[in-house]
Image (cartoon, rainbow, N blue to C red; front, side):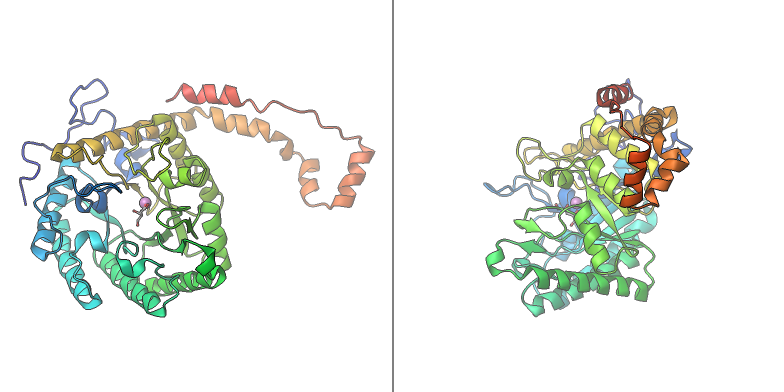
Length: 434
Ligand code: XUL
Ligand code: CO
């Protein structure tokens, strides 16, 4: 449906002094940052669900948006939605997009019908991708909205639901592979529990581990070269979700022998819900070479909900990209805006402006992160702080045992002198760049 964004042109880069609300002031795709194009560092993706499938409801009220592709229960309107999506990708010059099966096809109730509509719509999207510059960052299965998933997907007490989930994920992996997706994501919104009174936690975790092994086996069977990613989140919609945070996921992957096959898709808002900073989650993943991709959307710090807002805090974003750049940057992953406009932002222009803002904030954060790395101040401070470990005597400690170390402490009268952690000095340093 060409014309939904009537009057909105391709978003130009106009530089920091621009006052045009429909222009980029920092995101300049071709600008070189640390030897690489900005677009290739950030690898932005538009999330199909929030921009095109979500209708503006909240727990107290229904749809606020009026879109010509509602109600979303018909293949003709699913194609119209795809036309509008690609119109928006073009306006933004977005390199990637992401979807759940339920966002792109109408839901027609049974598996066979959903399979054939998924096939038809992914053929249609595939044709559009031939002439568009926008590629698929990842596909995923929505196994949380329909009532069949209310007690979980792979962790459901009912084996029929496990089977339905396996069939659904197979179909979504096939569709992702067909569209050249660079990753496949699993987020387990209902993989958890509401109460332990009715939950066999150990059995459910074993089923989830087996399920993920089947996903990996199938990836190799079909020759899918992308990464399999799981997305941590501590709760919401379930009271407790098994994929709680990065550390929990890494432990889970190790337990089920998947640590070399599966990486993490980390989301800023989920980190906050888990009581962590985003850079904490990234640093945990990087320490184990588990960073796959990021969802760059924030929560409202007062509400305590997963509000999926576009990022607007440059210092936070800068620290996230600092850890990403230090780890060598995003590889198959990207920066997905798992973010939605507020339900009062009902105009087509709001959809574009929100992405412009998010992309600009990330670009500023990336440039600040690169400047900190090039300056080297944080790295130098770390080197100084850990310099003691460079001596042979210190390295010997790690190869020794408690008894021998105790003797050395006595013989040499080792008496540590506390050293400042210099946190405020380092915070002031970061403030120079953001
Ligand atoms: C939900 C969430 C999902 C995943 C994909 O909080 O983040 O949109 O990113 O299922
Ligand atoms: Co997400």
